[in-house]
Image 1 (tube, rainbow, N blue to C red):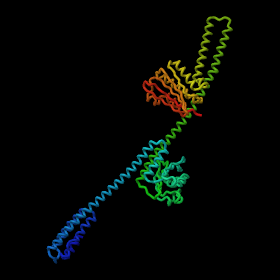
Image 2 (spheres, helix red, strand yellow):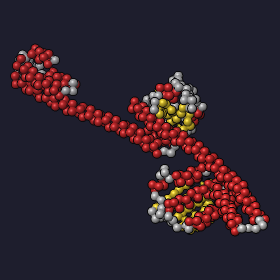
Image 3 (cartoon, rainbow, N blue to C red):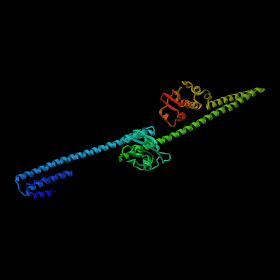
Image 4 (tube, rainbow, N blue to C red):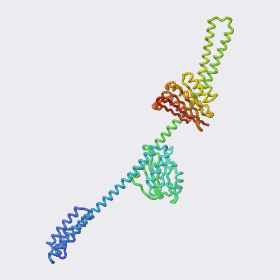
Length: 502
């Protein structure tokens, strides 16, 4: 182009050719957005403009021609200046656009990170799966601006999706029809939006729900009030266990990054679901174990009652009969020698001791006072007996109006009290034990306090503390509470709370 202009400049006389076309070279450089090209073309144009002064035919005053050529060179470099300024503005605008785009991407990514973090924190602290899902639905809907969120869970057959009944609705009245249709939905793998997600374990998106042939809930345009939908899986390992779906009233398309974030949230919620199911299974197992323990305890108490009755009635009657027969034999002997008299007295003493042993065994197997007078009197009898045997002073405070616990709950409290006394003798080195009996509208509470050396936290939580574990299990059979606390030189307090029952 430069040589073309030079050729034309050489053909035209100086009065006509002034070198102005060389400015076009500068504009080419500006169009190419290249400083080097602008400067190169400016230098080339300046050289050719000056060269044209000497190569063009003369038909005018040389001074005027030289002035025009100088003016052309000045104009050319002025154009260079403005081109460079324009180029600088373009570069600044480009940098500004790039910076704005980068800031927007950072802000968007920060939003995704904050969304994932908030859901992770809340779900890890949540007390139930429903609470975690409700929070996740609300956070995702608020983040995306989509007004509807819902959860499908896979049934026990591992094939059919059922609505979980957990929703986020920006406007319940507006989306009532869609909610009712969804409640009746039962979807197989590949069927509808959730079915597609279930089939391959990946996120799916439907831009136009009305025109999609595989969206059974579409119905008429004025029935469902949603236009676009997004579904993503809740995963446990490589297994899909649920599908979260979101809907917009407008036709929108989510970003690829949003789809990725949804997949990661699905894995997170899958872990929460897995943990919840494990806790539910554990709780069912614990309930089953408590029921077995309750049954075994009941059988044991029944057997103790039977053995106490058998020992008292049968063995006690035999010993009483022997005592009577020996007394008769003593009376019918004509002459008693000293050796015979001593033997008879020795047998009387042995029988009396055995009768007392039988009574003791019978009381320990099943205290009669517990069945006849109730738990408070049984505690008082056992505490008084404990004081007589050990020298540890016993104090009972009964604040109940009339404690009418059934015999099974009374037996549980009594056995726990016996274990408390055993621990006091073995470990506490106490001189006093205080028992407080009181009640509220639903429960009976017994608190046992001693003034011994106290129990530490390690002993309370140790799995080797079988006595404490046994007392705890006995209380939990009835849905009760068992707590132990104390400290060095502060004694130990055991508190048992048992529901009264019907």
